[in-house]
Length: 113
Image (cartoon, rainbow, N blue to C red):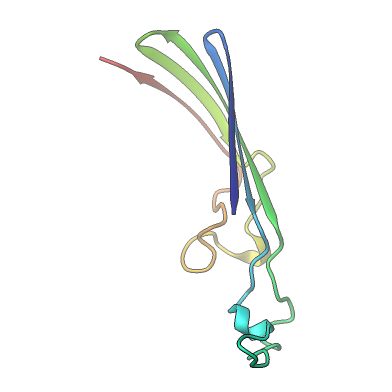
């Protein structure tokens, strides 16, 4: 997995971007499909598909500093509404690395006292 975060401040506005790339992963263990320590692959017919595909998520955010103590923000996570591959749920063992919600929008504020 690779994460990239970038932000650009223009006056009181801040624009943010996060990219999350997940390389294709084996459906089962590496040893099922590949030779390890001179031993042959252990279970090459485990599934007709060996790996989940690569996945890329894009998140964007904008924030406004109203004053020194108050900030408002809004954003969209998973802009492309990418679902977990092959019917995975995105929760639990093996699929928790994927985004479970699809596209997610939010607004909020922060304040300092």
